[in-house]
View 1 (cartoon, chains in turn cyan, yellow, brown, green):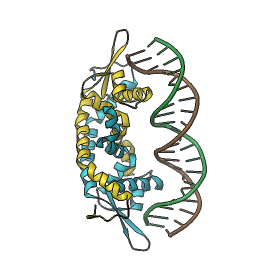
View 2 (spheres, rainbow over the protein chains, first blue to last red):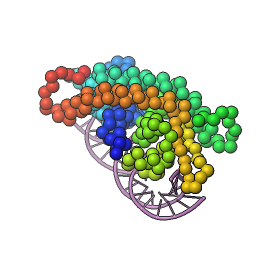
View 3 (cartoon, rainbow over the protein chains, first blue to last red):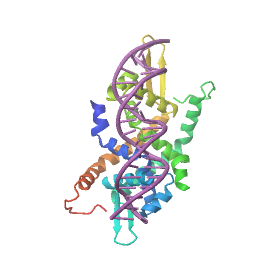
View 4 (cartoon, helix red, strand yellow):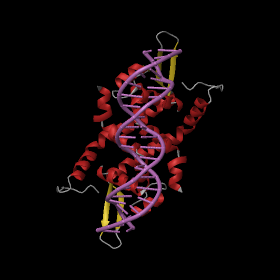
Length: 126
Length: 126
DNA sequence: CAGGATCCCCCTGGATACTG
DNA sequence: CAGTATCCAGGGGGATCCTG
């Protein structure tokens, strides 16, 4: 079926899966400021467990969105940085943020309206 | 923390949560063609269970992205259609598809390279 | 036809402790 | 410092059956 193709074969789905991932986008945004160390990321992204951070970083690295550089030092030093491919994602993330900021009020108003069925509205949303 | 604000308060996160949802985007894309009935959607989106379809539709409706119209007929007839807000999402989805199509090859190449560590590369991805 | 209700399983992801 | 290993609870989501 067409939808099946959409759901599995289609590039969008694969990208969606990564974009939709909670931490991936957060990491990409953090790295927009420049290369960061593991610990720096774990501190800046509050609430992320080491497991999830590592997992997220591996996923992004596998997709070629970030690069991982190990410096031959003691103590170990590892930097993560956006690749060119990763940087190209920033536009998309930016567009997403823009849409969000532009329409979040409408969305929240819709939610309130939906959650309060009895209340009269001055206009219909459809 | 800043990341906390990002993760919870920030509009982007809320939109991300919806965008990232497997079925939501699929439904929105389907509805881009025009209003659709429940059954039509369930057929076109292969693999979706009634439960998830309903849940997805409710979520989109709650966010004001789609409208639900019940026709007073027997058998029941319910149409779902994008709202103006929902339609404005199409641009974003379009941008996403565009990015995906444009870069999916790079991503897949990166994945192959990542999964085959021994292999020599002609160029570095960073 | 368009779902609601229920059961249940699995997998995500958090917490914690440990290591090269 | 930069992770890995392990354990474990919660919830997402499928399958199924039922109804206005």
